[in-house]
Length: 282
Ligand SMILES: [Zn+2]
Image: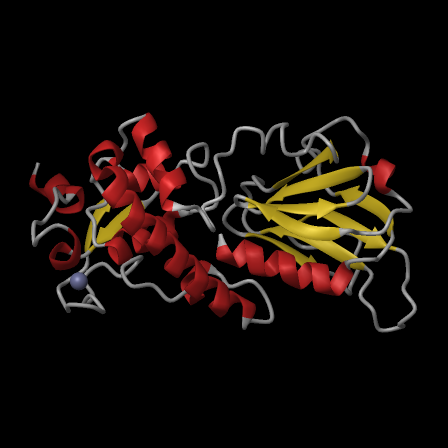
């Protein structure tokens, strides 16, 4: 999740050292934990906003707030401090700083009515081992071919599913799963056991380069991109020409996501069962 990584860096730059005054959830689903209470962090300076997998970690000495933004969630500076912010899930209010123009709050918002974004308040020494982070696999960013080969050997999975499975490897979403397979020139349906060590070398390199490119793009922005802003080689480009070979990008649709791939680059020209067309043929 390069967009989450760059956003964490941005928030650290803007807010680290600021002393927490209040944490306010705006509805009863926003805070997912009962203890320790958020007020354990009151009076403490923000150490850092970090990232683990797809989660933001808002770190104070006694507790860490773990935030999952889900699809349309944002954690943004909040100069308005309105009583009922639109889409507002929760707010961190900091003590007024020395600079009068400083924004003193961060607002967690979520568009739509799903309310799936949430905050976990966890004791700092247990945060990485408790839900929701406890069962995450190793970070995708910086994974070595050797580590990846071990994970490949554990269980035979389709590579696209493996990459999206946060318990296997953390931090790759639907877009990067498509992009990594294309960059590695492997079929999204190749199995991890067959890919083995040679496959792990190629996939680790593809993760590295896709992540680095997206991170550069995100770091150059003033705020977190939305999915439509991100430049992709295959993701969401069904029917468009491949940027490498000009073959037409294909899609296999599932209920929660779409697998996009280029037949020439990834499957020796073979077109995989496209259930979007076949459903009309039934
Ligand atoms: Zn291609």
